Length: 257
Image 1 (cartoon, rainbow, N blue to C red):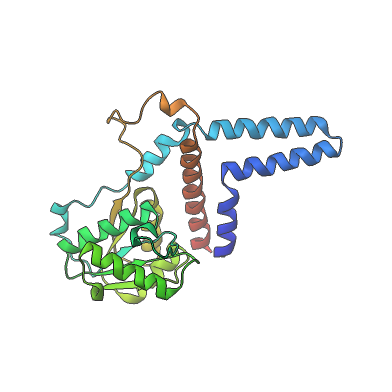
Image 2 (image 1 turned 180 degrees about the horizontal axis):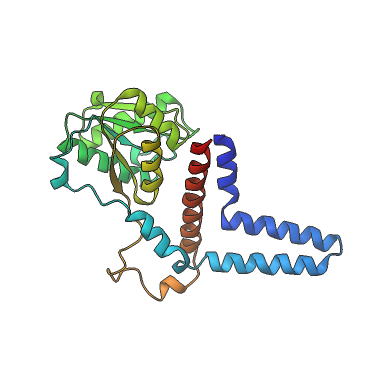
């Protein structure tokens, strides 16, 4: 099931859809279906153009990121959690590079947030998910040890999980480790789906979103004009929105089954 999900997610990228459409248009041209070829080609170009305009998905992504409030320090005193789950992103071993260069900025933000919370909730153990097919478990363990030294935390209090391939598998892994409340740390746009997944697994969860990427609407940092100019950032933003929306729908379908 996870392989099917990964394949579907890959082909939901605007650039991939554009490439596939252009291949189909080329084949139609070879088969002398010139009108069909022209329609498909122009439609895919229009799709790619619209997908590259940030304003198309800014409000939708901002709504996802703001669904759960940040877990500020004044709230941590009243939380009695058994574990802090730092959800993972891809990892790639890079010999000779600093350990913080082996992970994405998204995961680095999650890890730092987890450490911040752990200092205020010292009795809660950390469960850190270092996912991805690249890198052996030993390399991932060495990476986590290095990051623990950099962030000045006790490595013995951190549980590393390398085998989880999805948020659902991360939830099941946490479920097997504790029956108490869990603080879930992940990127803000991923948090709605993560919380739904953990709650579906019967885990009492507290959201700790981080790695906000969409500026607040009233911050003046969104840039009215740049929001309407096509860009690669707009394509990435649209791809993120499509992925999170499709993954949420997948979660609803599979949980019903």
